[in-house]
Image 1 (cartoon, rainbow, N blue to C red):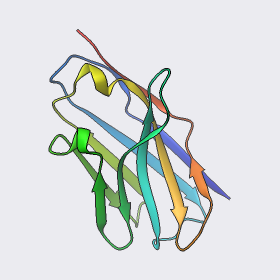
Image 2 (image 1 turned 180 degrees about the horizontal axis):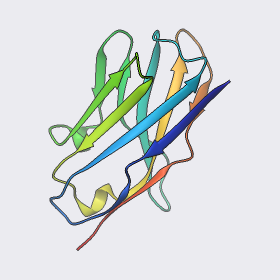
Image 3 (image 1 turned 60 degrees about the horizontal axis):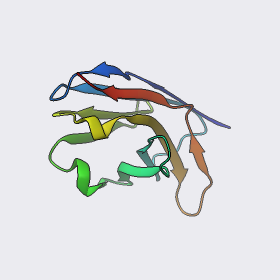
Length: 117
């Protein structure tokens, strides 16, 4: 059983920063993928950033240079530092975990990020 709990969302002005955290519990293995996805109203869920064991990082083009993903395996945490936020970053952000190879995807409940003046 895997549980993921996100925190850190909120309302921020354009150009501001937020740091999202995801606390994982249960059968969490280091040999896995952990990442962040987001879904805006009317849009499909899309990848924001992910870390694949041991340290390969992948970012969506729209967030490169602004967002930074990090992971603490000992604490079973994954973070998303978001800088220079734009209104188009507004979405519900979801934490994701998948054991390698071929494991099921697990999702958190999501945290709302709203970028508005």
